[in-house]
Image 1 (cartoon, rainbow over the protein chains, first blue to last red):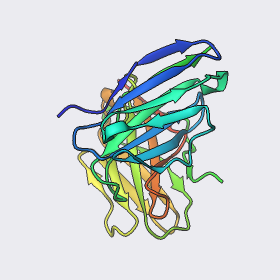
Image 2 (cartoon, one colour):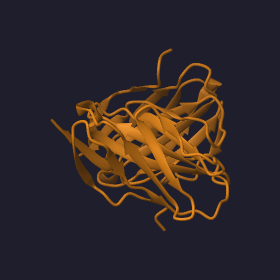
Image 3 (cartoon, each protein chain N blue to C red):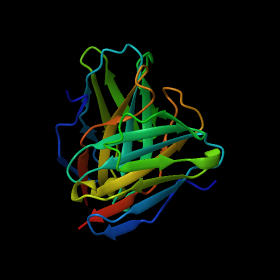
Image 4 (tube, one colour):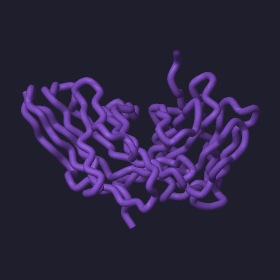
Length: 115
Length: 115
């Protein structure tokens, strides 16, 4: 069974540009989560999809971030326009259900550097 | 307020010895789950072990065990018989029943296993 995959693995862009990150969850996992780790800080929750619906987007930092999950399969996270403080590692995770003890399986992350 | 506290930024352990990684948490929700993840240098987050707040016994998974002390709000990870491949970043995390199933992470502890 393939794990969670993320693309690209690294991205270097200039301030003001747009970047789109992609996450492919494990097949059959209805729940998809985005997290990010800004340099030197904790991993922070961004949002949670159940199929194509946003269940919780309380962690999205501002309206420069737009997440979509059309069709309930893969998800994209777009940052437009990117700012310096957006640099960090963006993780995607998926789970079959959203139960309290349900394991969230993480992807390898996308390392974003905004110059 | 910090919900997950990992007070050890870095730890050293001799190969084949046991090591304890500390984690304390803060929640008023009676229903919660505690997780430990391992992040090797390759970057992926690997699920290690889970403890539910109502579980009577400490969780164990192979060489990993979770020392759950509910009254003290601590959930320390014990790795027995350390191996060189255990060198990695370790994150303690929590999910609250009323928290919408987002995972809250600690700052992490970097473990170095010495040969």
